[in-house]
Amino acid sequence: MGKHGNKILSMILLLLLLPQLCGCTGGRETDEVALVLAVGFDKGENSPLEMTVTIANPQSFAAGEGGGGGKAENYITANVEGPSIWECYLLFNTFGTRDISFVHTIAYIFSEELAKEGMDKYLHALLRQREVRRNSQILICRGTAKEFMKNNKPQLEASPNKQYQAMERLAGLTELSPSITLHKFYSTLKSLHSSPVASLVGTNTGEKKASKQKSPLLVPYVAGEVPQEGGSANAEFIGTAVFRDDQLVGELDGTETRLMLLMNGDFNISTFTLRDPKKPKDVIALRLRQAKKPDIKIVSDKEKLNIHQTIYMEGEFLSIQSGENYEGTKRKKIVEQAFNQQMQQLSQALIDKSRDHNWGDIFNYDLVYRKQVSTWEEWETLNWKEMYDTAEITVEYKTNIRRPGLMRTTNHIIRG
Image 1 (cartoon, rainbow, N blue to C red):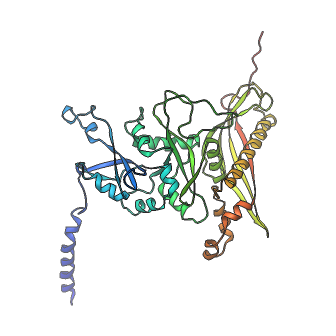
Image 2 (cartoon, rainbow, N blue to C red):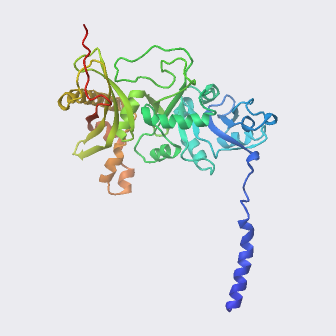
């Protein structure tokens, strides 16, 4: 075939491809789609699964009186029962006028009852679907997901979608709740040896609960237990759900969550309060961040592993109630040493708790040890659970209070 024939063939191929460039053949108009903001999963009463969805209501954002702008609810919550996630998805489309879509779904909420039975089959069903975003949050609800979603009415946000985004951002400022995506949870689950975790959520009944705090350094609450009254929503995001393989096996409170994030190297910044080393009736408040990733050294001997972890923190004074001048280089070491010692004791207690409750490695030490394994077969057959349970693990904190805030020194008040 000559040059002339090649040009004709190229023109024919181009003409055949032109219809494919005219648009997306599988596209849907915006007024044909119902955008799901959050999805909840519970055990059904008459079917294996009950699925609850929170859907953005386009009528609430419609302009003018004809569209009902400002009168309709910003979102709609509905639920249905079925044998599987996608059967429930199908049933939702039998009583609505729009095709529900998970393209903008930001949170997938599983009840603790469902999570205790196992998450693997639900994760497979979600991650196989193209609309499901792997950067969506995975949340474990104390109680039922249906009740949580129905009672979750944030007063400061237009919709739960904005609330979930805000709580994910605030988690990085309090470190009382981990930020776990579908992808991160599934990747940890498939790493063979680490124990996955997820953020814990719950509903506050509105009744002010008694404080459980015995030490100012502790935040001993999980979702639904915070002694608050008059908050902007019934939903609480605090604590961690712990899994062994794909099954829920335990909970971490706010303090234990901060420790876990520090030991994992996923900690950002938070406020800590401890008793004054010289005047125990008063407290000292610190704002600390993780200075760098933890230094983890694993040494093997014939009988067990020796794991030594060093955690580095730095920050500033927020409050010194006693008026002691801890800002100086020598005197601030008193506070640093007191803080380091207490954090080391709490970390050791959390390690012991993970072993006593048979949780496995929630600190991802296996990822460090993996460098010492030469083949995949060796890694696959490794009995890391036993190695973790028998390992000699020590945690050391090194804290540097670099700044005194906006006061260089504390001035004592002289009373007449």
